Length: 268
Length: 366
Image (cartoon, rainbow over all chains, first blue to last red; front, side, top):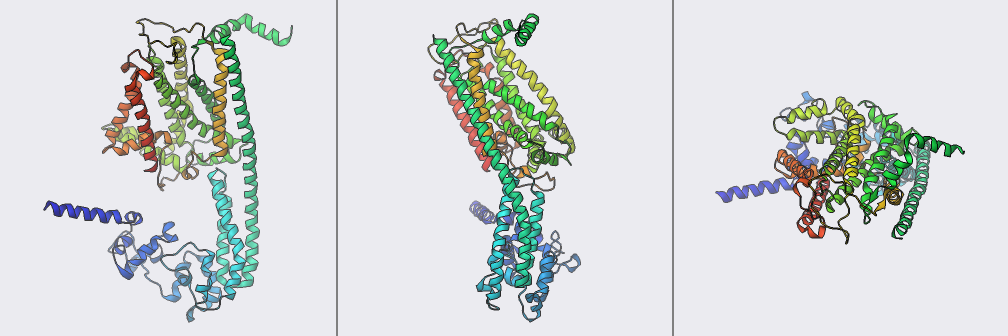
């Protein structure tokens, strides 16, 4: 009997130990229930846990509706449950949050062709395992499944530099923020420009992408200028700081030499 | 007569400054084998002065209101000329003070300088150490960042483990059931007025004890002799010793310069050393940041609370340890001060330091 209790305890402990931390932390009934299911109904939980949505606290009910605190009513339409949208409804489904991108997409070639199987959001971005959008999403392997890659390649080429600038400025602002600089306004502006930039290429119009990317680069240039000015201030501070540190060390050495002289005097 | 000479003569006739200088500075003799560890008192005085000066400058712009505190610190750092420097000197200076205090206490313990009827000197120093921790804790809340808010929440929560009065004590410390504007108000008052006034009085008392009883010589070299303390008051003199001013003062000045250089080196080359990400986010009572930890010097206490099965046992062990340290001169009464002749004490000393460092590292990574 005691062996049975012991084995049970070990099994429970092992199961508990092998659970991913995010699963232990999950508190919605959707994750509690679907996390224990296998196959089609359970997979989305594991996929979602690796997503940019999970990273930012966007959970199942934020997209699919329903009541995340009541297991009986979790999937009730009365509590706003939507479930899985039809293929053609996906842009509107995602567009509730990504408003600008959805607008741009609908006006573009992909959006116009949706009734005939044109690509919608999840075709490129995936559904539950959505990663942070990068230019890697525009690639020959994926795009050429539906059409030739030339146009997509042109769009990607004109976006590469701007994307690099955005990433660099993002890191620079984070670094300056950690040094106590007030960069909230600059971060806000970068957020706006990044959103504008992400929205542009969903229209898949090469000329427009080029034109508007140039505008975005102009705006980013203003932020870069401020970053350069702050970095220059930091360099100056470091330079003067080094001089002052050197002076204090020098003064310390001079005082020690004086002490040496006094010691000689004390001995004599 | 030249104006400066006239001024010196004018003051001399009225206050007898030369006699005071000859008696209290030049005539104040220190043991001949006095070492660099004896400069730490002067280093601490210089650092406390720096904290006071930078604190006064910060006070001119800081607003002790939960809705404005964070923005006012942002303003100081970004808009006020050299505000960033004063803020960094004050915040990082507090950490350097704790380092200097620990070194001072550890050197006093190692050399058993608390012996020879110096219980008052040790006790006043020990209270100064604890009060400085209190000033650090109250100052920690003032920037009203996520780190300030949650570290204070965790720190004040610990008092709740005390039986019967715990909950009342937590409410008393916070000025309400949770950390809020009322907590900021009382911590601000304690940080800028209450505690510094008590600290000033205690530093005066500590210096008085040191001066009145006389400097305890280092227990090293042929000059050292273990002597029983006399049953009456005696000022320990050091005839033929080193004059405090200017002979030893220059060594004080040298070590002060090195400490300030060290402080500036952190400010200019590793400014983020004592500031985690949460120190740059405004306090949000509805968003608990992950891995909130107290300052490095409270980590051992923080982890000790978690090691024991209940917080009250953890608090009890910490209290017993601190009480033992406070009463050490009353417990360790033998005349011997040489570390080599006190193997039990030195073993406990080294193991104690290693234990506290290990628990702190554990606390940091837990």
